[in-house]
Image (tube, rainbow, N blue to C red; front, side):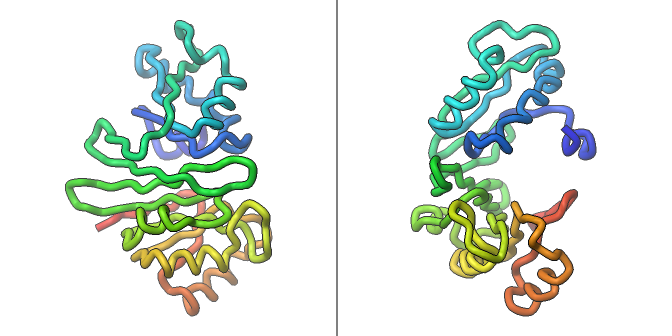
Length: 208
């Protein structure tokens, strides 16, 4: 909600839910204002099989029923390998391993410029199919939870290795814990991995 207010986002064409874990699902009710702004029409939601079941279990009142004023309404779809957006953009998807359920890895493309942006978060590794899909991308946003091992997330070091293998022009690491000292890691990354940086709230990136 705060991100939308701060960035003055009045409309949502569609919503991609990478997976059904609580930190990604439990804020979806805040999408209701976008339904109101669109005459009560449901928002298309694209997700995994598990994500679809999770949303159906948590928000039964939002699915398959006539939308009431002020309430959220959702149309659930399985994310296809290639999704064409209303504005002309293309989103390609691939499954990534993340603990007890897969998560969606996404590669966004702007056809008019050919620029590509890979979004691989909440994943333990980046499999070969995902590597091939995102190779040589202009920007990669990669999962990097902390410096030490975690059973379902990549470490900072692993994210840097993936960035190199992808040959991404620019990479930012996201989903970091309190263990990451922003200033210290920013300085060390500038020396060891100059194409890699750390995300922060309000970060804006323009692909030229």
